[in-house]
Image (cartoon, rainbow, N blue to C red):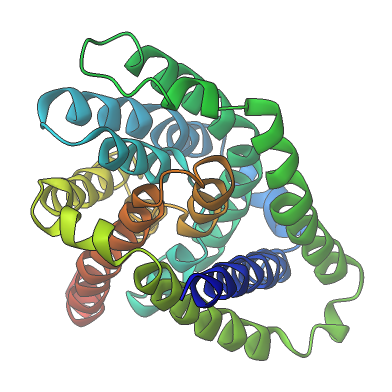
Length: 297
């Protein structure tokens, strides 16, 4: 039984790595340097988008953790996934809702790149400060190694994305297998979710009896609202930024959870459950906006 569980853990880690590399490579293939330069030229909108994804939402997440009582590992998982921005699902939902797809894709790439550097800093601040309380779990603070997290994100996360962007910019006519790569990534995500749940059933049961799921549902709506409010005067960019902020980067969060918090499996479970919550809520919004878009022309 022990060997079986150990084998599942090895398979989970291997599938997760392949999923992250394929996902970030496909993200890079979705934009080119010319598109990035065009979108970045709108300094005001870009600044608001970056502030929302990398500053405002992490602070809101920390406030929610202070208000809503949760176990330490559950609050850690919630904070982890909340500070990870730049999810690949954002542009896809923007496409479904007939929003500004180039803006959503460019914002996703920039947020994803900056997340590799910002996330270790936020985790160091939040989890170090959480160790000051009387009820804190002392194992959290020494577990965090910002440099180790940064190196992992750069190697498995940032570099594949930059390679994809370079290929799309230099050889756009050779990007033939992007749709196939996206399908493979989607399948691997399902496999990762199943493996995380199967290897952490006790953590899932504990989460169901806590406020972690409620917090995830409420926070996704808050995060999406923040993006919508800051998305500028145009409906298309409002909706796009709502998806960029409401959908957090589950891939990056899972990478960190399985590496920096391997001794706390509940952290990865929270990340997966949060991912399900954000997919349901923002997916419903994308469908609703797609049906209403004709009336907003």
